Image (cartoon, rainbow, N blue to C red):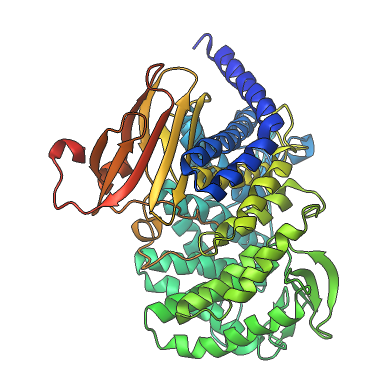
Length: 570
């Protein structure tokens, strides 16, 4: 323990050096990667992807270490930002956008610090109780807030933070906290509507609630979740939309039956209701519930209408539309464009059709034609959201120029990181930097992870869709022994979903193994073959990197085998 701080300092210094080299070589790496993919050289592509994945993880590690130093010594919580005036924890920012991704990073990159962030979750819960709260540091004080603000913070924490953890890890303390908060929000339902009581007049909150409640119902079959989700949806589908030109205002006065705001904001989280309504409709349709028929027409009118009035000629989304005139009043381009398009893909999947595929692809292809666009006024959060927008859709629309755009665009976000590890001024949105960097690293490794992670280990993968073969590259500067863990179909193992669909705060599935199927692993250096069950690969393939067999190249493919020797199932 005496020299632990020195070891951490050396590790961070190594990260800075490696990232500096990576920045210098990144342009060539991306160029060579896409040339390799064009030629079908997936072995080389896996190697090059390892370089890109490595940079993403090293940068996330540095953010984690920087914020570790800002933990409040009394509570173990982290502040909203580095400045003295932001020395407090709150639900809508710190809990929603920062803390969950520090926990995520620690789980994969620094298991020795994971307990700190699990303790943070426990401490927040013990201080606040069922409903999240804001906590001032030095002197310690639970801050007073209006109920509407408390509910807003709770919905943000649930959908952007805890739901993101549940999407990756499934059951755990975060999932229990998620259910506790959602129950607390439902218990506050005090807004009278024609469909029954709901908890907010905010379209953003109600959209977030729909997304969380729908996924919780898939997982638990708790009818209370579905009943509240349907109540919220019917307020919008049967009352608000038909009486508001099939647009939604930011706030609605349900007692008067009229909007409190004259604008429909597509920007950022103003569009949460679009994804929320589509996600519930998908559930209703797949479950064969009679309400799906009632929901379809108003939902489709809504989707069709905003396609016409809310976009540029190229298919990108504008920030804000005036509901009265149906004219664009803020011509800025939405960085969360893919979050909106997720709803269109969900609708198509519910219908078993390709009604909106052409429009989705038109937008996707348009984005790379704007290489110099400064998303959200050159904010790293803007780049994070637009990159994630593309990553959510690429599993369904394999467009080469869009893949390359992701590799080019993320460099701009990476270059905003300071030598200290913080992003620009060091605020809660640093968590979104980790969130996107991890999505990118998983994309570059096709969902694979290693344990233990170490700063000098490289892992990358590339998938040949034609031959259905996964190529893996693993290397390290020093001898390393550990496991490569393969991803599972988390939509099924975590949520009980019948199929995967694009949704907010999820982690896209790339190469996944089925625990009931078998796989052949070929060592491309030696030609040695071995058979493994999907269950064994999910637990981890044991590998050993040393000076004799490094680097390691593997090729993985599914095989039909009735049974495997017990030693290969381990």
